[in-house]
Amino acid sequence: QVQLVESGGGLVQPGESLRLSCAASGSIFRAYVMGWYRQAPGKQRELVAAISPDGLLTYTDAVKDRFTIYIDNSENTVNLQMNSLKPEDTAVYYCTAGRYNLGNFKIDYFGQGTQVTVST
Image (cartoon, rainbow, N blue to C red):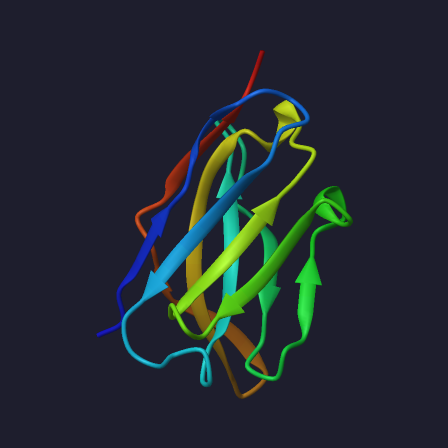
């Protein structure tokens, strides 16, 4: 059973930075696509960024050039560095682990979520 535990959320002002961290149990980075999703109040959950086992990176357009997803193998964490934060980045952020099966992508594991609030 894989466990994902997020940390690093909080309240910041526009233009500031935060780093979210997701601690994973076991050596899952070689087998799973790791991602960060977010869900704002009244909105659907959306993919923010993902990293595949072979290092392919994916970002939603709204965060390109501001957010960076990376894996720290020494800490067994997948991290999301968020710079130049905007109020519209306010959401609960979830760490995920998923895999492709017969061409279909399925998220197998979700973390509990961490709140990010960007406000003056």
